[in-house]
Length: 129
Length: 164
Image (cartoon, rainbow over all chains, first blue to last red; front, side):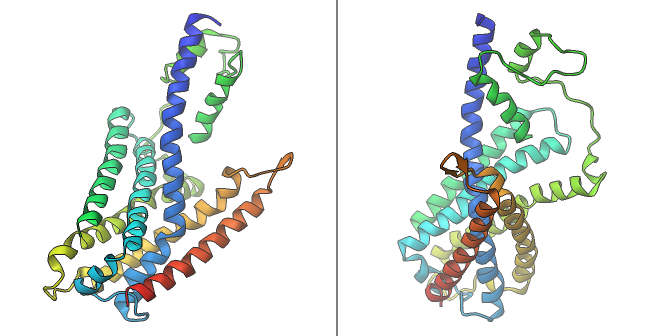
């Protein structure tokens, strides 16, 4: 193998590594979004407010009581943060597909950076309630 | 686009990289180094290509589902951020308003479309080894739909019990 080829292979390996990490987070987030999000929206966003099932009261006091349980906080952390990485990955390629071919690096940084920021904010909010 | 990327990945394991040759470029080994710089040639394409046929539109719709899902989760995050100052004041959260229900219905439709498409192709993506072969994709897909059902019952039940 020539040195040019070896260099190319190394570059590909490095690209593979970052590709694997972001794709892995995309897959985990996609799974969380697919399995947990619909029932949560249905229960907390529709059936609860309509009074069909006694899911959540609209007052902050009952929310605070539920959030006293650390398992609820952990669940909410996963529910919110994992799909952010899924959305970041999809938005990244959605923007490119929609014609934003320039600034690919900037798009990637903004999308994944947004997901990381959102995760930190979620962790902070849930930790300080 | 991910499938195209995986085609490139496979070449790292072989002594001689095998990249599908572009028309008129067969046998030109200098293409390999061009390719490794990740600046592949891009055919010009109109920005409304995805409206051209129904399959492309469905693809875009599927990719777009991430947006309303994220918006709903961020709305939940905003409510959670207000809990500390709102608790004890007797204030109402925006969760109960009619506008929020409408917003949730729209987001739920997109979320269901994501679940349906995501779990539907999960059998082709998740390979579970079973002896010398993989578990049949249809079984993997069915198991994932079952997981969705079980998770929905568990989470729905927990939300009713916890947030009564």
